[in-house]
Image (cartoon, rainbow, N blue to C red; front, side, top):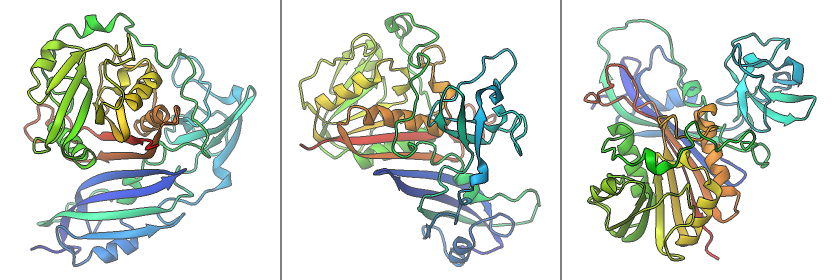
Amino acid sequence: MKKISEDVLASLEFSASYQHNGIQHTDCYYGQRVNLWRDILPPQILQDLHGKQAGDQVVLAAGPGTLVATRDERSIYQVQQRQIMPLAPQVDTIQPQFGRFYPLGILNKVAGVYPNNMSPFRCVSANGDGIKADANHPLAEKAIEFKVTIKDVREKFEEHGGNSIDWADTALSGPGMQARVNGSPTHFFADDPFRRADDSPDHRFYDQPRLVQHIDAAAIDTISRLYGRLVQPESKVLDLMSSWVSHLPEDLPLKSLTGLGMNNEELQANDRLTDHCVHDLNASPRMPFDDHAFDAAICTVSVEYLIHPFEVFEEINRVLKPGGVFVVTFSNRWFATKTINIWPELHEFERMGLVLEFFLEPGQYTHLHTYSERGWPRPADDKYASQILFSDPVYAVWGHTRSS
């Protein structure tokens, strides 16, 4: 079996795990063609990888400043409101909200900041006169467990040159944005965040069945594996906002699987369901189930359509047994007219932060966790394989109802 050296190409999965305010975060990135001679890896990781083979794993306990730059006070800017520019001509000026991320390029007349700079800053305080903008990496002060798993090692037939890739920097671009600032709630909820471009009754939009997959096969497999890890065998499961496919593993035995969705034909086509009901959560968040009826609940690529998310998350808490798990997964594709207004405005990692707020607000969930997987190659037989290099990313947030 081929071993890691400077003369090979490797497929590596990078995983960063860290805690913040009692919440566990795990973010994974798949590197498909890692060139051990040309690309950049943390020195200790590179040293530990040599001589290893597919299936092996190395771990780096990275303190602050090891993988991302240490916090620098020079990267924190006090900015007056008049210095904040619109994102584009003929667009209203942005009023940054506490805890949210924005591109540095909207800050005018700030030393070292140039227009069109898309590097993110976080608004860490705001008042009527201006904001404090923190452009440090969101993980600058965090201890990170950085894990590298070798998926494949293959011979490198020739050296083509080109740009080096800093794989730690790539894997850690985005992670950390989902965490609150100092434990204070992020201000996601200004300016009618739950309005939609199409506010007509949802039953009209979902009247016709859509028997199609909304994410690619690799993303579906990622979600299925995650559900298989979190949902216990022989559970009674609620598939929230369900459709013609449930994404639970086929070999996971269940006592029951109840689908709640918007289209009867789609639900009837789902042969995994043992029961189903047509119910519009946006018209009535109250669900037609008894208290503590389920052991687990899942919601797949649909949370972005909820206009009453806090009420729905409280309802899930009601219908789950104490200690039950609620897992929410999503990607970066949606029906544009029906998604809530704030969703497309957010960075992909901020969306996990928004969903975290749905879990945190009622104070009824514990053992909260966020998870992401990115960078996997798009399946060769996917209809977009010639246009899109990567599989659809997967983001997940889950928590357990309190046991007492």
